[in-house]
Length: 38
Image 1 (tube, rainbow, N blue to C red):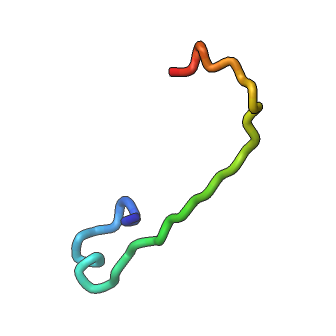
Image 2: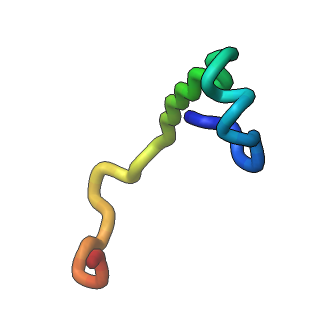
């Protein structure tokens, strides 16, 4: 992801980006009522 508010002349000489990665997990009831699920 590119860093915001960095002037173009700086970006031309130095690669200003930060790798972003995310994961998530959770539990879900086996017999959940999904009638209101979008």
